[in-house]
Structure formats: structure tokens, C-alpha cells
Image (cartoon, rainbow, N blue to C red; front, side, top):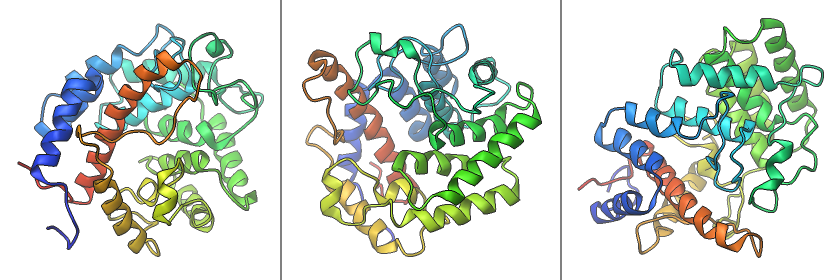
Length: 308
């Protein structure tokens, strides 16, 4: 036992590793090997590059619920989550191409990125990835993308645009009485930006602290369904949002340990219903690989893995 908490046993860790190696995409395998076995990050770059298009954006079902090959702000933001997690240099050509995609696809009149392309409906997709509401400003994905621009995109977008976008995000947060979970997650990723000005960071932090309690599900019974769990907000022990959520975090860690499947994986809590049933079978396997790696990362940060 570590930190008086239940931990993932050596066998359970091996089961998860075996599932990733046998069932997950090569991208998740490369990420696992880099994080847990010290493999070269070049393998992560090589696998991630396979999802990038000539326009610099990412597609090809990097987000498994959107199967469109076309680039999207959604898939490109997920690519940058991986780039940040693995501390990939901003000087890499792949990174700068991704930045240029964001610069080229920003709607400068409305100051927002369309999260999925208009053509996405031509490919299999989850029923919620429709075109409804995609032409309006939202914190998802705009706040997250702003963080990546601050960290990697100095050469591709001018300071005036960055300042205007920053002001709009802060103003949106201040006007909110409640926040949708994906908007919140994108704002949390904005806070992870190393180059976010302190005054903006403090403003965003203040507003999120005000809004978080209404967005996080702290009842374990609610975690059986799709929703925002404490560990998605407090994803490391030194999180600024941990105050008041300590008990919920302990419960959530134990819950995640108990949710590991017999095959070593963690499975999604959602489905596509009767939509594209054959494609969903592919997507669920990809999601299981992604989620299994994400659960291992969370457990690693909280020192809740007993390694073989």
C-alpha cells in the first residue's frame, strides 16, 4: 500500500500492459512504452504523424468517435494533448504544421474554431458529432487551443488575435453561472500552458474554482454513467482544485481500480447506440486502449501502481 491507498497490483498492471500491447492502436503502445519503459519519444512522434494531414491538422479517427479522415480542431487539439504530455519539442516540424493549421482555420471575425469540419457527417461518427451549434463560439475547443498557441505558436499568429481571444475566454467564464464539463476540461488544459500570463491564469483559476463544484460528480453511483469525475479535474496531487475534493479523489481512485476489466482494460461508459454498429466495434476497442493508458497515467501520478 502507498499513501494509505489501495494500489494497482503488479499483476493488474501487467494485465493492462498486455491489453495495450495486444489490442490498442500502435500510438497508445508507443506512448505506454515511452512513459513506463523509457522508450524513445521518436516512436510516439512517428505514430502520431500518421494521423496528420497535408494541411497540418489531424484527423483519421484520432478521436475515435469521429472517423472522418479530414482535419478537425477536435483531433488536432487531441494531438497537442499528446505532444504536451510527452514534452515533444515545439520545434518539431509536425508541431509547427499543427500550429499553422490552427492559424489557417481560425474564424477571425467570430474568434473561434469550428470543432469539426462540415464534411465530417460523410464518415461514420458518434450520434453527438452533428453540425448543430458548431458555428458559434465555445470554450470547447477555443480555450484549449489558446493554450497551445501560447506554448507553440508564437510564429504563426499575431499578439492582437491572442489578446482578443484571451479576453473573450475570460469574459465568457465570468458570465457563467454553471459550466459544461467539456468546456471545463478545455479551460483546465489552458491553465496547463507554460506561457499563460499570470494575471490571466489567476483570473481563469478564480472562475473555475467558482464553477467546478457544480460540474463534478462526487457520488460514486454517478460514475457508472458518462460525466465528470473528480480525477478528471484533480489529475495530480498538487492540483490547485484539490481542496474540498480530497475524499472524492480517494473514492475515485478506488473506484477506477475496481473498474478494471478482466482483460486488463478500462472500457468507455458510452456507446453509439444503433448508429454505425460495425464501426462502433472498432471505436470501442480504440477507446479501451486510450482509456487504459489514461487510467494508468492517473494512477502513476498518484503513486498508486505497484510495479512488477
